[in-house]
Length: 79
Image 1: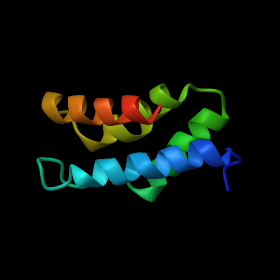
Image 2: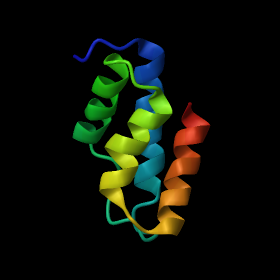
Image 3: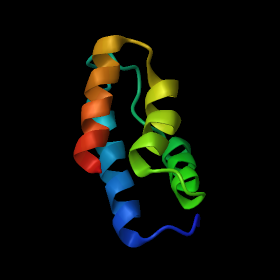
């Protein structure tokens, strides 16, 4: 749909799953499909995957430092 390769799409799906595991541990919900698509669009437009995920996923989900750190670790592990 966005025009990214299968490897990046798989990494985004895995990241979405990881973020959903944080739901109930202080995070109200994990990354939505829309957030993952937005990250893919940003990467397709030339942004680095880590930066795109931090912008499209981490910033909208939480401003809590501990949860942000956990999401950042998940992003770093994915890319």
